[in-house]
Every structure is written in structure tokens, then in C-alpha cells.
Amino acid sequence: MAKNLVVGAGFSGATIAYLIASQLNEEVIIIDKKDHIAGNSYDYRDKNGIMIHKYGSHIFHTKSEKVWSFLKQFTDFNTYMHKVVGYLDGIETHIPFNFNTLYDVFPYTLAKKLEEKLLDRFEVNSKVPILEFQKQDDDDLKFLANYVYEKIFLHYTTKQWGVSPKDVDGAVTARVPVYLSKDNRYFQDKYQGIPIEGYTKVIEKMLSHKNIKIRLKTDFKDIDTSKFDKIFYTGSIDEYFNYEFGQLPYRSVNFKFETYDKPYYQSNACVNYPCNYDFTRIHEYKYYLDDKSDKTVIAKEYSEFFELGKNERYYPIPKDENTTLYNKYLEKAKKIKNVYFLGRLGDYKYYDMDKAILRAIEVFEEINK
Ligand code: UDP
Image: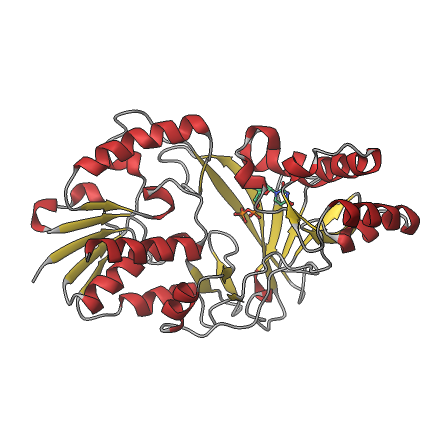
């Protein structure tokens, strides 16, 4: 029986492991440095019965029928649709900036005038990335664009990425466009929700196949790779090559958890602080699965640089010079037979969960061509 090694037990690793074990009936050993499966989507119920997302809020959303039907084999989802509240000048309002935000933050007559100008200039329901939105020749719209840039993007992005929105790849801020709509949801994808028993359970089910063996607290460096026919590597590609060309930079995140002796701390699962404080946002976990408890657990999210041995990798930093460095590793990777790179770290791409799963399905389809 062919033997496969999967490095990393997050969504990418678990998807490829499951597909190989179930569809090819081959043996899979899946290893992870961490002492748990599920990678950064790991969640657990704490002593108050609240499902905690250890590495920050994970909200599943996808447009892909393929990914949705794949995951539905392992879980049902609730009907949670993510909304983000932000404090702009002390006003609790909606992010992304939309028509409701417009009326929350400006006096009615000004909001009405801006709304009319916006509808003259853009299609209703269109999404406009902030860096595009700033390209206005009308003075009122220019004023609005500057307001949104300053109040929503400038400080948040500086906290999150250490540089201003103009110095991060436009695709990053385009994730949260100005939305010419009254739809307050963060995502408009057809399929959205939280797995009803949490993410760890989903991955546990994916990996509970007779052909799959899990080895936690296991470093790839300690594995005799000659025993395997194929390797699927979801760790950081620079680490695989011993940082030969230098380290790929990442942002990391530090969560400060707090428990409160009251049913709720804030009005929403996720509250962004784009104007104030050192943290970017506060997560209140009980909202996701509507957990009932007299207590509540929150996490304040602080962004920092990733440093080897000090913290975890969370976000690749999309930037030309980093892509150039990644491409050097990719060129090397292409020359090795039977080793496949995937996942946020393996591909050095800012994938959401659904994109990581889709990529793993594609790698599987590729090896079976
Ligand atoms: N962003 C911002 N202000 C906000 C929310 C997002 O400036 O209130 C920018 C910021 O640069 C952030 C990016 O948009 O990194 C993408 O936000 P998203 O919520 O998609 O990030 P994630 O949830 O993946 O951390």
C-alpha cells in the first residue's frame, strides 16, 4: 500500500489526507507540531461551555458548491451570518462601510446628499475597494472617501500590518470594500455558518478514517521521509528549504483572553476598533454557536511581526518583494518529485478556509490526472 505523509493537520492537510485515504485507499500519516489537530481553526469548549476559537474567530463562508458539499459530509452548519460592528468616533456602526454606516455617522441631510451622489457614480450593491474609492473628482465624494480611509482603514491597517493601507497589497484592504448596499453582513457568499460542533470536530471526523494515523507534537525534521511515496507539506515553504534564500515574513497575532462574570460583554461577536486602542478587534465567542452561560469569554486581538520560535505564523504578507522570495522557493519546489506544497503557509497565500480546502481538492485532482 502506498504511503503518504501529510505535514500539518489544519484544513489543507486534513482535506488531502481524507481524500487520499478514502478515495485512493492509501495509507496516510499526518503529523503536526502542535498538540492538537485543526491548525489555527482549532476550537474547544471551555469550562463554562463556551466554544473558544483559540487562534481567533473563524467564520466559514464560501461561494463554492464543491467545498460546501465536501464539508457537509462531516458537519451541519448553523445559520450564523457574520456582521462586524466598529466604533467610529464613538458611534457603534457597521463595517464594511455601507449606506447604513453613512446614515449612522453623518447628519441626515449630508448622508442623503452623499447617498445620491454615490448612486449616481456607482451601481447599487457594488463593492468598491477603498484605494479605488479614493479616486474621486467630486469634492463631496472625496470628503467621504477620505473619511472612510481615515476612520476605517488607516489606523486599523497600520495596527494589523505595521504599514499604511497604501503600502499593503490592494487585495488585502479590498477584502473589506466600501459596499453600496444596506446589507450589513461581512460576507455575501451563498453558504455561511459555523459547524454546529465546532471546527476541531470537523477535522477529527475527516481524520477518523482507518487509513489515517495522526502524530501530534511531531516535527517534520524528525521524520524519515524515505519511507513515504508522497509528501504533502502545509508548513511554511521557506522552512522546508531551511530558509536557504531567507525567511518569508508573516504577521502574527496575540490574543489576550478575559472572562467576565456577566452574560455578555459587547453587542456583537466581533467589534473592530479602527480608531482607538492598540488592539484591532475584540471577539466574544459565545455568539457563534449561541452558547448559554452566565459568564462570557472575550479575546482582544493584537497584531505583531512573526518571529521564529516566539509566536505563530498567521498571515503571509502580500507584497511584491515577498512574492519574489516565495517564487524562488516555488521554483525549487517544482524540481522535487512527489512533494506537494499547499495551504496558507505552503503556498504563502492569504487563503480563507474555503480556499484552502478548494486548493487541497485541486492538488488531489492534480495527482490523479
Ligand atoms: N481592515 C481595516 N479596517 C477594518 C477591517 C479591515 O482597515 O475595520 C483592513 C485591514 O487591512 C485588514 C483587511 O482590511 O487586514 C482585511 O480584513 P479582514 O477582516 O478580511 O481580515 P482577517 O479577518 O482575515 O484578519
